[in-house]
Structure formats: structure tokens, C-alpha cells
Image 1 (cartoon, rainbow, N blue to C red):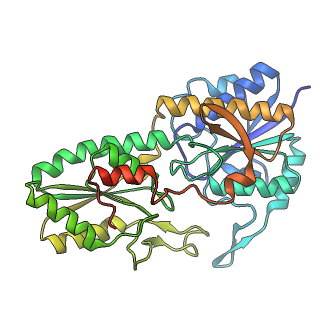
Image 2: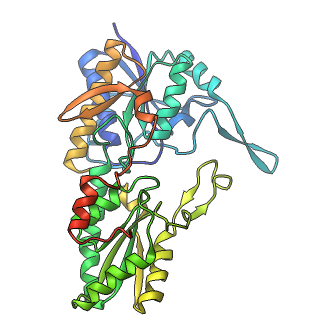
Image 3: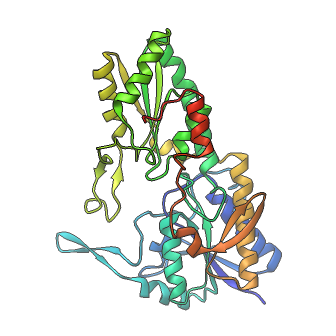
Amino acid sequence: MAKRIAILTGGGDCPGLNAVIRGVVIAAVVQRGWEVLGIRDGFDGLVGEPRTLKLEVANVKGILSRGGTILGTSNRGNPFSFPVKKGDGVEMVDVSGQVVENCRRLGIEALIAVGGDGTLKIGKRLCELGVPVIGVPKTIDNDLRGTDVTFGYSTAVEIVTEALDRLLTTAESHHRVLVVEVMGRNAGWIALESGIAGGADVILIPEIPYQIDKVCQSLRLRRRIGRKFSLVVVSEGAHAVEGEVVVRATAEQNYGIARLGGIGEVVSRQLAEALHTESRVVVLGHVQRGGTPCPFDRILSSRFGVHAVKLIEKGEFGKMVALGGRSVIAVDIDEAVESLNLVDPHGDLIEAAEELGISLGR
């Protein structure tokens, strides 16, 4: 029987989102004769008057290689804690009832929620309220459990690695310390893997609180053997043993989500003062999540979109599509959001980095 399903993209944008949308539309519309509604701007599009787009094959032509999302997204649109202006301030209000009602009014028989930890937690709660939800894991941070890897991560690592390749030559030319701040709020996967790939001398990640004297010790040793430059990669969520995460905007100032950033400046200043050398900071920021997805992410996203449709066909809701080994599988959303996928401080990847002479500040 023909179905009407919907898809939304929540949280930060990510390479591969459009490939998921394309996979869903082709599998649902072309292969099964279903109707697909695109929800505008994440869960925001289901609050108040619904904002939707009927997705046909024509909508997804040429979007496989495009970054971002044709549906728009929002990393603040939590219907269970939705910002509503009240006088001169903002009050967080539960508007989840509007989302449930709009899904009913629109005749949505299944909702595909593409996003990271926050989006999937919202999807899980909506599923408990009666909305049939299928989750698709998306985050460049690779911090979701239940899947071997999330789409968008490989592209982010490639982008950072290319930047490190370019920065290495300028650091060497000017005999400087170059500190590169990358994304990674709670998980240091991007910093760790791109740092290894890009020949970094120091990698600082949230899972291993650093000691600045240990970092300086490592860089002084490089100088004694004639290496007058250094490349330091720092996750935005990294912090010193006795320090705190550097925050640019608190949760109260930023609609419930603290905005990190600035640890690169802190580390650069500390190194310059301790080593009496020039140090510069490069913050890669949103360039890591923008632009064309790499082939791996295009393929994985497409597979995820197709598998989400197959789960709807089977009536298996409350599930998240995932990569297990070389196969796309389904896991309970509960499993994916119960805890974050963090770097093991004593794991093989960390051991390899230290064997390569990379300082982790410990």
C-alpha cells in the first residue's frame, strides 16, 4: 500500500545529508510509489504551522554531491524545550504536542529523523508519544554509539588533514608553532585521526585532559633535535587537567546549547610564553562540515536512506540505521543515545599515536 512518510534533518549541517534525502526519495517514491514530505528546518518545521516540501525525483536530481541540506536544519529546535519570546526574554516551552498533532494532521505514517545525539533523543521521545520514528545517524564528531561510523565524519577528517598538510609547510617556513583548533565537543575523533594523518606533533582531545608542561617538554625535545616548528591539533572540547572547557557562549546565552571555542588561543598563548617562540592559531570552524561529501560518505548516506525506507516497510520503528562491519543494520535508538562514543584513552589508536611520538599532553 502507498504510504506518506516524512524526513527532516536536524542539528548541524553535515556532508552527506542530501545523499540521505536522495536515497529516501528514490527508494520510497520510485521503487515503492510512496509519497515523501520534506520537513523544513528540522523539528522547527513541525512547530506551529507546518513547513513542508513534497519531495519528488526532480527535487533530488544533482544533490548527491552537494553539501548542506536542501531541507534546512536547526540545532536549537528541540520541541521539548522550545525557545519562545516572552517580553524582553526567552522562555523554554514544551511544544511537543504541536509536533505530534501536526504529524497526525499531515497524515505522516513514519518520520525519518536524520541527526546526531540531540536529534535522535528527540526522535526517541516522539516515538514514545506515538510518532513512528526511524533514526539516521549524522555527526562529523562520530560520537554516536550503535554504529561503527557516522556519515560526515570521513569528509571532516579529510578536510582537516588537507588543512594540516598546507599549514605544515608554512609552520616550517617560519619556524613557528601552529595551533589548529578543530571541532569535537565531547569526542576527539576528528583531532586524533586527522592529527595522525597530517603529521601533528601534539594532539589534545577532550578524553585526555592535558598538562601544558608535558606539551612543552615534547616541543622542547623537537627543538633540541633541530625541528624548529611544530603542529598542534586541539579539539574544541579539550581542557587542562585542572581547567575547564572554554566557552564562547553559555547555554543560557545560546538557547540551551553552550557554544565552545577559544581553546586554541589559550594553548597558543601558553606555548608562546613557555617556549619563547612565535605561535599562531587557525580555527577551522564550519569549513569542516561544509562542502562536497567524500565518496565514502556519499555511499554510506545513500545506503542509510535506502535502509530507513526498508525499516518503515517492515514496520520496525524506534530503530536507527547503522553500519556494523560492512553491512547496514538496525539498532534500537535507545542503544545509540544512552551514552556517547568517545575515544578510549587506552585504546589502540591512542597507543599508535604515542608510539609515533605524538604528545597527548599526558
